[in-house]
Amino acid sequence: MKNLRSTQAAHAFKKGHYHTARNLYRSLAAELGEHLFANIIELCNRAERARFLNQRAPRSGSPGFQEEHITYCVPIFNRLGDLKKTLLHNLDVLSQFRHVKLIVNLFDRDDEAYLWITQAGAVYLDAGLLSVNQMPPLKTWHFPRAKNSFANLVQTGFYSSLDGDNYLTVEEVVRTKQAMAEFGPCIIHHFSGTWGDGTCGRVTLPARLYREGGYNNNLFPRQFDEFSLILNALNIEPASPLVVREGVEIFRKSHYMGLLKDVDGWVDTSLQCNLGAEITPENPKVTNYTQKSAVLRLFGKINGYYSLTRVARTEAGKWRFHQQLQIELRKAESSDVLPALAEYVFNHQRKTLPQAPTAQNTRVALVKRCDLRALAWIARQRSEGVSQFLVVEFGEPVTGTSPILGKDVIVLRPEVGDELSFSGFWLRCLKALYNIPHTLQTPHLSFAQLANQCEA
Image (cartoon, rainbow, N blue to C red; front, side, top):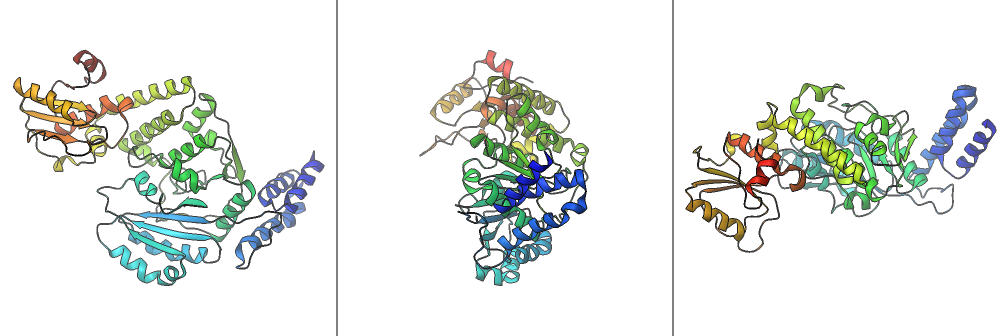
């Protein structure tokens, strides 16, 4: 068996498959002694550095070798301080490679970061290594939407997520490029294995999978966003290799990945590889940081189970994940932080909400869109003495000329979840925002249906 592994390692090295060769040699070294294989492992490291670091056309090491392009994408919202520490370092690293680029999308309300980048990074902008875009400002930070903003800018090659406080290293970029060359259109998760250290959000994958799958925009604004990207990509290409760092058994490490394997029959396609040294990000958190915040804890659980419902392939998986999601939503509804969650659901702080009366003749309603059908329902309610309406509109807005609903109608659109799983939760969130104890009504459900589905 040892002779076979040694032969396989030598064959992999000859083909330029340095990750595979290094893994085999390291397994032999663990059994027979590090000193026996240190030189050949170092030779693997040097060979891949020579392949990707020199500025001349690379020697392939195998027929048909083609180096893929990586676009590192950095979304920024009020994080200029971090960017001043990391950006020039990362650009210096990338300047040693071919076929790489770094794009910064700025969501700030002012142009301070844009002016600093264009001045400090002028050389890199001129060389085409860096580009920067001033995006429409975000009201509040939202990881999935910010990270999806590069979809029209990354057409080919590989997308790679990079937060403003993340550092690149030469070794990591080399090993990332080696994984692409060796495993083809793979998904690479740069997670160190330590929750909260700032590395879990780092994902590299083919631009096609990023554009087609992407991050789930209708999650709460943080927690689980990177896994939604990975799961969406694996749902599109189930056989894609998932390259992870040595020692990170992601289908065991992640409770949700494990559920997909155990309940929904997903195949573990992960490959452990040495992805190079990393530099600790600027803002690492303690491992259990989510346990110290009820809001973040609920973000993670709701986002996690909701993401599973969107990619489940079996009836058993769909049922199990939907049921677990409903359990977490009910926990959220009975928690003290429901008003805070509601602000994120509707992207409104309570102090900025349109004012609504607290009279008992206020109706809280759920409609797909504020169309003529909804207008007719509102007219009937007015005829019965209702003087104020709070409406959750969850579908696409009416195209063309919208009906005039009246000054007594306040419409809010949920930005988290979907009708199937979240309709009752939306209505309870609306009631929590306005502190309304009234009966819920809707033009789309009978009162009996509504009482079962939505009544607190």
